Image (cartoon, rainbow, N blue to C red; front, top):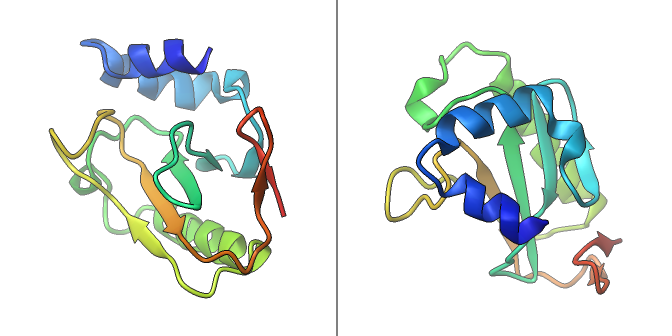
Length: 133
C-alpha cells in the first residue's frame, strides 16, 4: 500500500490528489499517527534516511512553503507539533527540513521532515515500520 501511495504521490495529478487526500481522506493513511490535528498530521517516513525520521504534512493543498500565508494558523500548529514530538521522543538534537521544488522535493505537496540521529529516545521500529518510544 505504501509503495502504491508513493507512486501516486509522484504522478502527474499528484498535487490535486494529495491535496484532496490530506484534506478529506487522511484517515485512510496507513501507519501510526504520531500527532494529528485538523491542520496537519505527523507519521514515520516510509523510507527513513535517519534514525528518527518523521513527516509533518499539512492537510491543505499547498505545494510549496511560499503558498502558505505568513499569518496562517498552520504555523503555530506546526511549531506545537514539532515541540511535542521533540519532547515525546526526547530528542536532544534534531533538524526540521523543508525541501522545495524538484529534484529536492519528490512529492509536490508541502511537508516537513523532523529528523535526528539521536538515540536517547530509545525509539524502535517494528517490522511494519512503526515505532514506539
